[in-house]
Image (cartoon, rainbow, N blue to C red; front, side):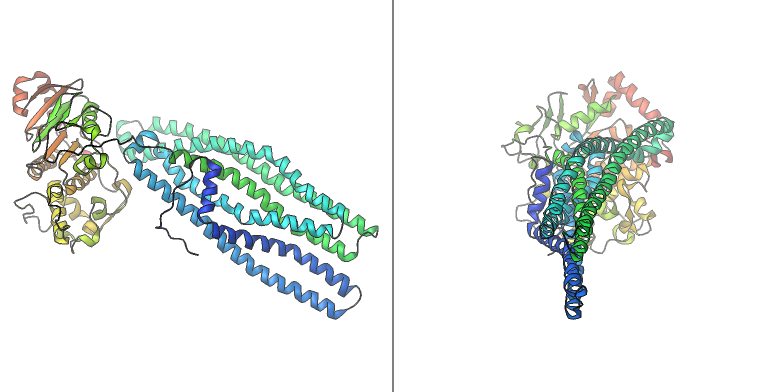
Length: 621
């Protein structure tokens, strides 16, 4: 059997933690069955060794029959060798069971996160997703030990009880009733462990989210002088998590201590009863040896049964967290009307903003959240009465909107990997352009042709996919428009240079230009960008403003910004007050006629003397 990491993981059972674990077993039932059979035979044969030893004593050693002794001894050696092979196969099979459950859970979680898309952040924190991937997945896969050694322990326990019946009914009853009694003693502790484990798990996800926030904004916090306050808050939260961890650990230690100690007391009782019966002549010396061997053999099943209960308790808690995540649903998409075939006006009635197709429009407001709210409504990331042409956006299927309208978020995620992958072009499509000279050329080489990037949305239906040369040209144009050539020139391997998650090994301004290049590479029909140059110095911002205007000429572009360098190049500027359009015109017209607009932009202009400090991660404005 093999584990295919790319096959369809199936549809998980989201009705509860136990049902999710059962679904993982059903998805690989042949492998789970093999693990249960191998574990059962392995444990039963552990108990067979005392049986063979008793026969060797009674039929060979005691009467002095060396042939019988050799025969029974040979049987023990053969059974031992076979059992060693079974142990190897059992362990190998159960490793595959655990890895399958691990990969399958990862795939269903990642797949569901992808389906949620932009709705993910609004419904669950980053720490919850990280904790599922780091901790819960491993806990769930480990709990599936129950289908191998767990089942084998039950079978071996029953088999030893049957063998004990052939020796002594009293001893068999002690064995058969003793383990259920142990379960009754440990059951309440398992329940309390589940409760404490769930609370610990909740605190862990919250703290993990805070760690991610700190890692992303530490330099900004340090610049604002807030590092100490955040560090104190983190210290308090981590202290609470530590205390909760101690409580979980205390409960776990009691379970493990009782799980080891009680079986030993129980097995000591069985051994003492067997010795008394041998002394009284009720059982033979060989049978006494077999009783002792059975008691030793019972150690494995009893230990596995207790461990199975412990792992299942933790696995159910983790599975419930995964199920809760899988139950999250994006906003329903009930759109049935096709989007306008031609570029059309986007209108947001809540603010009064009208976006004329083919023009560069700017939104200016004192409160950035007002502008980003408009962008979210125009891209249908939040419910609204916005329209596209004469069609409400809510009536248009979401895939059509996503394929034609793009929001360029200044804090959009950047994944770790080679820079060309981060921007969005696989190495195989670079056409040999992975090096600096191939993609960027010399500093004096003109990079921008007469036209814009290929307009994929307006391409004929039978158009061929872009060639490698086209991909390379589009990449060159996007990098040029974002003024990102110097970033690639500074990297040792150009576009092939690996960058860290969120590109934290680049400066704030470099990250912003990489995000802009990625957005421009997609060449959307409608581009909505929020503060695309906020972390750039004035010289670089002016360059981006000029090139962005040229790159998007004839295409619908909306910028939420207060930078005069961008506003001066806009065809239309909407001045927003309290989230509504207060004035509309060109940048120069509004400067001359709107005192509120002039005061807002003038303040921005005074702060436009950006330094490389902005490029080191601190926003210029």
